[in-house]
Image (cartoon, rainbow, N blue to C red; front, top):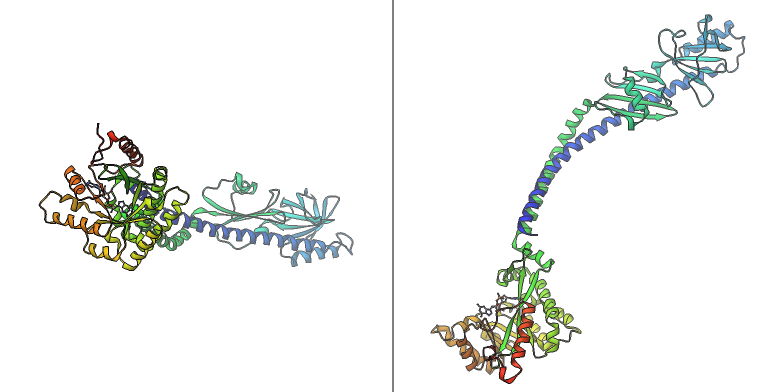
Length: 532
Ligand SMILES: Nc1nc2c(ncn2[C@@H]2O[C@@H]3COP(=O)(O)O[C@H]4[C@@H](O)[C@H](n5cnc6c(=O)[nH]c(N)nc65)O[C@@H]4COP(=O)(O)O[C@H]3[C@H]2O)c(=O)[nH]1
C-alpha cells in the first residue's frame, strides 16, 4: 500500500473512529431509554393481567357458592344470599338467577321486566360462560361483563379488569385473546388497541410506545406517548457521552499512532520484509588476468509497491539498527539460491558473494539458513562467499566463532571495505580469512596524487603475504584495471565491467562472457571485453 493510500485510509478511519462512537452513544442512549420504558410498560401490562385474572377468580368463586341451592329459586332466602354475596365480593356488582334464558331474580329482588341472558362470548376453563359488553339494564349505565354458570350469573363492572394505579398518560386495555374488550383505563384509542392486539407486524405506532402481555387467554396492552422517554434519554446520554468521547479520542489516537508507525521508515521496512519486497541484483566479479566472469556480488534492492527501486545504503543502516536485517538476509539467501542454482550447480568455479551484517555475524543464524537452502541444491559451499565488514565485528569472540564456523562449513570468508575502518589491520591478525576486498575509495586514488594512493600497494602487499585472495571493488577506468593487474590483484568488480545486473541480466552476461572466453582467438581482453 503506498503512502497516499495509507493517508486516505487513515483519514477515513480517523473520521469513522471520531464520529462513530458519538453516533453510537446517541443511538445507544435512545435504545437503553426505550428498553427501560418498554420494560416498565410490560410491568404495567402484567399487573393489569393479574388484576383481570383475580377479578375473574373472585367472581367465579362467588358464582360457585350457588352450585347447590338449598332454597327455592328466587325465594327470599335465595335473594338474600345473592345480596350478601354481592356485598361481600367487591368485584361482583350483581348476581342473578336465570331460567330458560330469562333473568328471574337478582340481588335486588324479583325482576319486573323481561331481561334475556346475553350470548356467551367465550367459555372459561371450568365451563363458565363470559359475555362481554353487557347492556346496562342490570347494572346501571356502565359496561358490564357477565360470567354465568348453570342457573346463576354475576355481573362485573368492566373497569375492574384494568383497575390499577398508573400515571394518567399511560393508557391501558385488557382484551380477550379473540379481541373482545374486557376493560380499559384512561380511555385508550380503541383503533390503536385493536391494531396492536392483531399483532406487531401490522402495527405501526409512530408517536407512542406500547407493551403487550398475553396470559390465560387474555391480552393486556399499555400505551404511552413516545416523548416520555426524553428525560431517560438525557440521563443515558449524561453517562454514555463521556464514554463515547473517550472512545472516539482513543480511536482517533490509535489511528494516528498506527498510521505514523505505518508511515515511518521502520514501519514501511517491516511491511516490506513481510511482503518479501526485496530483490537481488548481481554485480559480476572478473578474473583480471583472463577477463572471465568468476562470480558475482549479491546486492539487495528494495522494490517498492509503486515499482521504484531503493538502494541498499538507504535502508540497510536502519535495518541493521532495528535488527530487521536478519529477515532481509534470509530473503537474500533464498533469492540467491533460487535464482543462481542452475548456473552455480553447472559451474562449480563460479561463486556468489553474500553480504552479512553485524547481527548476522553475531547470531550466526545466516549460516543455518544458508545450510538449509543449500541442501540438495547441487551448489558447493565454497561457491558461497560471505562478505563481512569491520562494522560487523562488534564482539571479537562471537565474530571469530562465526567466521570459524563458516570456514569449517566450507564457505569463503571475505573482509569487505578493507581499509575504511580504524582497525582493519588488527582484524587481519584476529581472524583467519580467505579473501580481502579493497574498498572503492582506495581504487579511486589509483593514478592520482592523493595521500591515500600510496596505501593501496601496502594493502595489496599485506594481503599477499597473508595468502589472501584479493578483490578490488569499484573499478571504473582501464587505468585502474591495468594498475591492479600490474600489482597481480586477482579479481575485480566495477562499472568498467558491469554494473549490478538483474538475475537474468547476470545469467546472460555470464554465458556471453563464457562464450567469448572459450575459443582462444575470441577470449575477452583484460577488461572482460571480447576481441572482435
Ligand atoms: N560508483 C561505483 N559504485 C560501484 C562500482 N562497483 C560497485 N559499486 C557499488 O558499490 C557497492 C559495493 O557493495 P558493498 O561495498 O558491499 O556495499 C554494499 C553493502 O555494504 C550493502 N549491501 C548491499 N547488499 C546487501 C545485503 O544483501 N546485505 C547487507 N547486509 N548489506 C548489503 O550496501 C552497500 C551498497 O550497495 P550498492 O548500492 O549495491 O553498491 C554496491 C555497488 O553497486 C563502481 O565501479 N562505481
